[in-house]
Image (cartoon, rainbow, N blue to C red; front, side, top):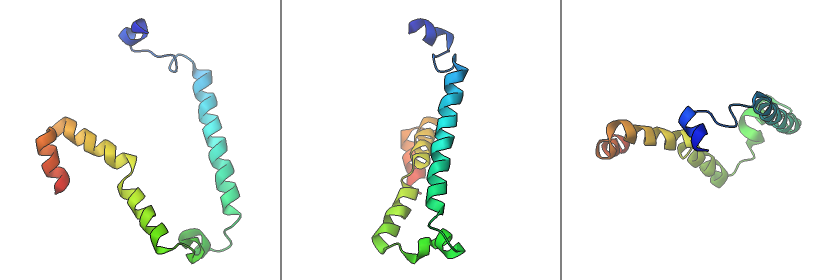
Length: 94
C-alpha cells in the first residue's frame, strides 16, 4: 500500500477493464431506471410536473435536497480550503 501511495497509482487506476465494467454497469442501471420510469409519463405535464401529484412536503424535501447537495458541501469545503475557515464562514453567510 505504501508503494502505491508513493508512486501515486492505485489498484483501480491500473485495471481499465474493471473501470470500464463499473462504468457500463452504472450506465445500464441508470438506463433501466429511466426507461421504467418513463412508462408512466403520457404528456409533457406528466414529465415536467409529475402529473401535479407532489404534495407540499414532498416538494419541500426536493428543494431542501437541492440546497443540501454534495456539490454545495464540496463547494463550501473548497472555499474553506482556499479562503480559510474564518473568511470562508463570512462568505458562506453572505
